[in-house]
Length: 508
Ligand code: FAD
Ligand code: SF4
Image 1 (spheres, rainbow, N blue to C red):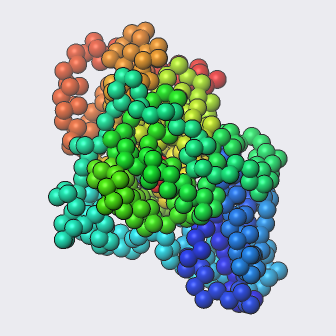
Image 2: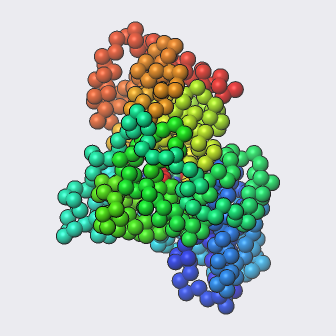
Image 3: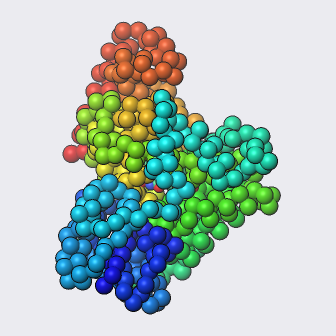
């Protein structure tokens, strides 16, 4: 054998560098499903199901092309352990693999791989991002995003941004009227319009129940795409039905409506069933055809051409040290209700329950409900990072880690975000209907009705006052803090201690 091509579960693009010059006569593909990849953090069953189903479809498609695929169906052990054993049997002259998306895997595979190949799925390379970062005091999405728009000519007319501005967020990010979202309830099956009975998928589900029975989450509540054709149908459904309203309600939340106007494309993109260029093109075409407004399309494209590429750049620029950052010195354990959803706080209950059911919560639920609570509560960054890496179908470390450590927990000391995303329960009240059915009152910070978010917000400012003074952009919040009389400060302190004890009790 000349080359053994290692294909990982999130490298399922046929046009990847792994297949340049592939010769079926002398090369072969190697793929393996190992329980170790679902237990190093206890992966949501649905996450594992999406990965394995997509991998098996990829295997079958390559075999149908006449390629040899050495494939291990779910077995205990680690990827590097199985690869080493198979290399001894197959004796390839070289083993090639596209650059893994996770530092941990890259290091585990490094001794076994002759050469890592560039990952062409992305629109920028880690080296280009390092160039962009060089000499800058602060990294901010906005400058990177503008460079990417110009470089790829996306929403650019005569060298200028379409519509005369780079960003239309003032028109986006509204909340729903009191009556709720202006649509019928969006059903899980409607999301992707996939034939529900995929026999290959049923087999994967049985393997997961047999091998990983104690992992969290429910199986099969959403037919997440597992082939390029399914992912393309999901993209078409989103562009047709939901993109026009995407921006307007990008940050809104509503009880019993987990999906709203979001694309649900992250797992398809991260497994590389979809190419980001294809997604960006489809969105821009919808605008040019008059089907979707510029604000929605720009807002959507910014997530993919901007944020998605930007967080990957941050990940590779700062790993492995980035994963250990804890700028706010937070050491609380993750409350147990993160694994069950059993809490009186409606916002957390809704977000965590849908996460366990679907493996999905949208960005603001992740950032401003679970993430905000962990930040204010003072959860150890590694513990909340491992939770996010475990529970979402789209979770892969290069995108999850900067979003958690940087954007949501401010544990990187301000590399990703210019200030912590700290807010009281009033933010959640403004952006959702959660507070209406909650026993707490977002306006109260002390007393029986006090909203834990609001209590912990003031406690957070009190605990970190000195550090936050140096952050800048926190002036208004710190001025409000300075107005708090001493007796109120100590009442907040006592109430925050009670919230922590309550969360601990709920955890037992
Ligand atoms: P949409 O709202 O429809 O957005 C469109 C696409 O833009 C997404 O599919 C995604 O590819 C991209 N995108 C949007 N926001 C971001 C962002 N902040 N960073 C990178 N890409 C973005 N995303 C993941 O793909 N995997 C993760 O493991 C992950 N972990 C996260 C953890 C935390 C704490 C936070 C705050 C965010 C995380 N995100 C993660 C980013 C974002 O929440 C998800 O990409 C998004 O919710 C996926 O749903 P969607 O496809 O419906 O997205
Ligand atoms: Fe969440 Fe507080 Fe609103 Fe209850 S009152 S839903 S805990 S923000």
